[in-house]
Length: 266
Image (cartoon, rainbow, N blue to C red; front, side, top):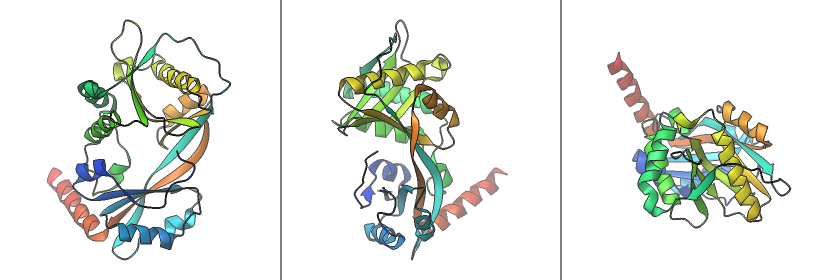
């Protein structure tokens, strides 16, 4: 994650396409950069139907101040960041490899994302206006877009004499650290240390490119993977709350649709 973020609401093409609504994002970091009034002004002036706000958990007053005029706000989840210093780490001998994926690998990438993240839930599930988003399809679209970016690298992870094991997308833009922004192992390959091996390979590449650390994050509910990171030497660094600021008429309409669908299911 960047040490400081620009204070503006940025259009989210993937989430807007997936939801049929105009969706923006803003990260308020470090804590205390702007007041709740300033944040709300940015959100209202952006004109989006939904704004996804990520702010440090220390900004408790900001959390209470979000939502104004025709908008309402609620917390959708908490994102935890971990980091490991890699400058002085020794290379571990691992019988595995990372292959960089390109635009020609889009079908393979789609297949990996579908099989790895089937059934995965994120903060969309907390919002009636976004609950119907196909998370896998959104991740597929987002990962495909990463194949065309110079500041991101998508890797296929494999071990000798094996079919593909996993997928990892790394943001390499920052001069001092790399950030794993998507990573997973196929269900049939889990429980064999594959995930740890994949992360170790990413560490090796980051260190060889002169980076000082590796950053990774996940929702607070994913305790299992955080325990794995701790065993590898990662330490918690930042906690961000995710808020959805939604136009009231959209939220009310979505709630009606949700309640009607629940009644039909009965």
